[in-house]
Length: 193
Image (cartoon, rainbow, N blue to C red):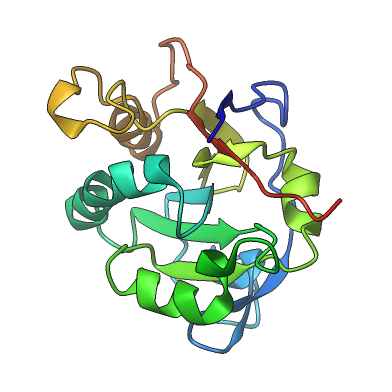
């Protein structure tokens, strides 16, 4: 297990989210525009913030934030926040990350959508590098935060700075995020080639 930092130059702050359509653990296809309420043909309430988080089932860093993501899901309403987990790992070499195991993992990990990026095209479009790799977008799907959930990594008992929660709150209230955005750290995405 190699510890890797997210690529902080992946998307620039203010840049629009890259659109995608992926298969979810509910066996339905989901596009980012549908999830974030941007499709004018679908009557959805637009969330004020959207998290796109590259994750997987087996990574100890993802498992380490499971409880914290579940708490964040409980802190904010669906109108304030939607959480999209994307698994881009090569399941052929990492069977714990298979689609069937994603369905089981999703029952414990309270992301709103858990999607399979089988071709890894979405991870490449976002320049995602590690799990977890967290991107926070505003209601216009512009990047406002890319970084760690907090300073605890695997150990929740060591958390002193709640970076992601603070970024969500500031974005919801229309404030600019002025604190330093620090890279998330985790296992590398398991690429096919």
